[in-house]
Length: 67
Image 1: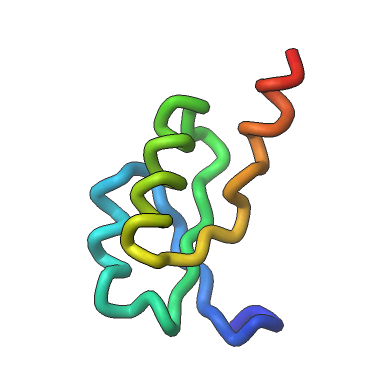
Image 2: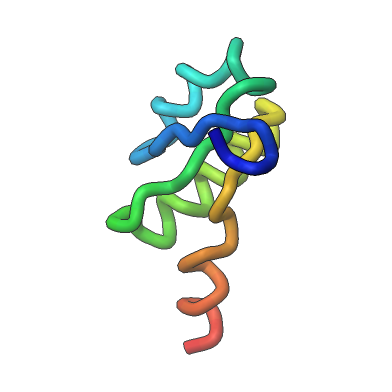
């Protein structure tokens, strides 16, 4: 359990977010490290639609947009 009272759930694609649909008050999504920028953006957009908290939403997006 994290300090914000969520459990961490590793997400590799948009379909993995569907598993958290009924448990969005207990689990927070963490995007896996090997996910591309395009897929990250799709995951973050879909998570916002489903009201799922994403722990590292701006992790790789912020560093690759600066280049």
